[in-house]
Image 1 (spheres, rainbow, N blue to C red):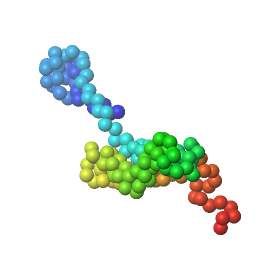
Image 2 (image 1 turned 135 degrees about the vertical axis):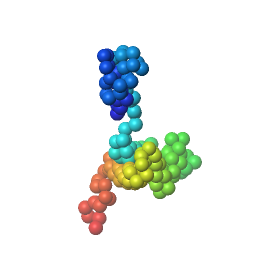
Image 3 (image 1 turned 90 degrees about the horizontal axis):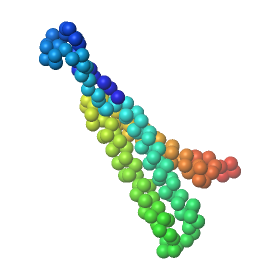
Image 4 (image 1 turned 135 degrees about the horizontal axis):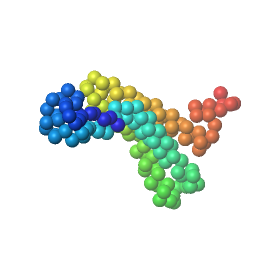
Length: 157
């Protein structure tokens, strides 16, 4: 949060280099401040937070049929949760969904910045989104599947 002091009005004379301040407000001794909720550092957190959410949700959705014990079951015999998870998995596993998420995060963090700074912030936030999404995806896979996240197990070559 930033606070921008627009002017201070004191008693008995001008404050802040504004001779008319005391005359216009009657010397009330009040301070005028404008609070801006726009935080420039939000782009540092937005990419990793959205990325972790995307990766974790994608991995969890992929494991719903395993958790419900419906892996080798025909599609028509699966429950509603497994079918909904399969549909969500088709969307979340698509490369365009991950790319669109990175572009959306990049746009959100860069829209209030100057063009050059905005492009840099957007690119970094989008990149962080994908790096953290990939890490979270494989991290959650390790929790569900066990073993190493890079899929190499001793004795497999």
